[in-house]
Amino acid sequence: MSVGGDQAIGIDVGGTKINAFRVSRDGTIVERSSAPTPADDEDETMASMVELARSLATPEVLAVGVGAAGLVDAGEGVLRFAPNLAWRNLPIAQRMRDALGLPCQVDNDASMGAYGEFRFGAGRGYRHLLFVTVGTGIGGGIVADGRLFRGAHGFAAEIGHIIVEPGGPPCGCGNRGCWEQVAAGRAIGRMGREAVVDHPHSILWRLAEGAPAKVTGKLVTEAALQNDEVAVGIVAEAGRRLGEGIAGLVNILDPQVVIVGGGVIVAGDLLLDPARASFQEAVEGPEYRPRVPIVPAQLGNDAGAVGAATVALEELGRVMA
Ligand SMILES: [Zn+2]
Image 1 (cartoon, rainbow, N blue to C red):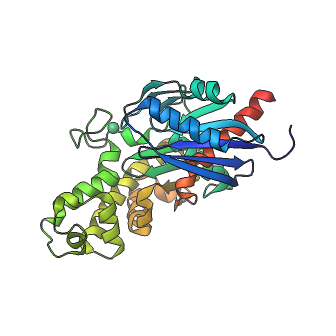
Image 2 (cartoon, helix red, strand yellow):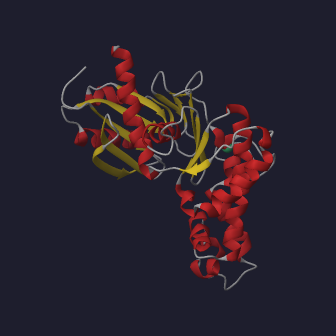
Image 3 (cartoon, rainbow, N blue to C red):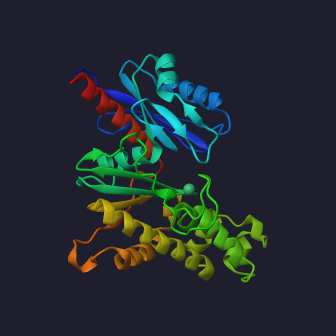
């Protein structure tokens, strides 16, 4: 179709940071750039995305792909609702096209992470995968029969907001007891703050300088990696809740593999082994189905932007074909 190595700009807009990469068709990151997210200001966030994209645009760049947290109307390129950000009905694709004169595809950020892992990471060689990203909350992405599954409106795979504990901890989406409130970073932090009171002089207590309010999910994970018994138990509890949720999703989707990414994955098998165990107990007919491996993601924080660039290039190919 064209000469000189097709490239796209992939932008991953997170709650705290915007990652923007220039990516070639084979998934290589040619150039990277980033900026903090002004999370409570839509216009500033858009301006920052445009500026990053401009700084990366070269004649090789054919398209822009954006992954944004929340409900993204992928057909229209509009971010409808972001539970943890102030954004409502933000026409990202239109604004990027107007500013850059390039086609722009917008999807959910975790879906873009899933696609990045599918094409260039832990999902290579599979056609059916579930991607679960565990950070402060939980995001998801689904690849079914080799294609990104977006649902009717682009809203599919918002797996963090399945209610697993009615009346449980409140969630940014307005409900209570969502999966992401009991199995991700916020839950780990909450359990840590509760537990540290009864365990003075633990590693966790020392890391928090004796102040329970200073305990975060990240700190608990750090303590767990230093073999703090209380922290290991908390990460394991989150892992068990994670595995139970994954079992429900595997019952629906029947993937070949489950890839777990996101910040909490630094805990490694401290999180994943309990998840695998509870998954195996909770999934339907475990002894009558092929084992579904639960594996860590490989692309880390790069997955979203690489996936977004790749999807943008592939959409372009489909439009032109
Ligand atoms: Zn929720």
